[in-house]
Length: 209
Image 1: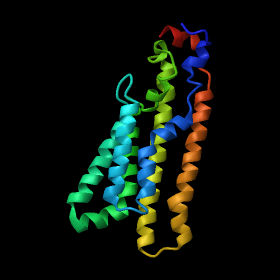
Image 2: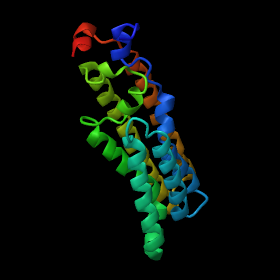
Image 3: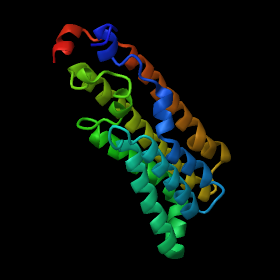
């Protein structure tokens, strides 16, 4: 057993939000590249990044976040290359936001049974704590927070793309495209740090679970 206090390990105080953000690299890459490259090629590059992430994080089992991103990027790339001009127009307006909505919905839907943040926490927390009530509760909460954040980003990107296409004021498009998503991300990081710093109220019970 670890010499660290049970309250520290079961409380997942070592959860690092930077690691979570790095887990979203394929989607972040897609969001940036889609401003300059065709949607299809942006999705292909993001897919390659996701597959690399799957490979380098596969120790101990496949991680749900890079796998989900691989699937979504693969679908977008496939639609972009075989869908024709109609699909191109649709993806130009909706691909970035739609991808985030799909990923966010997946994260929220699986948060109660397979929270993706648990994959990050298990790299640091001893195995005997993985099934404790505190560990499960912390990761359900964190995964939900990040899932909702990704959903907010998706809504903002779709709204920004359609408003920009309709000739809306640049300041409004800028706010939806960058300001609100960044604020949502900052909030998610803050909540992650706050939740990860909490101490369980009944550490002895957790240790025995």
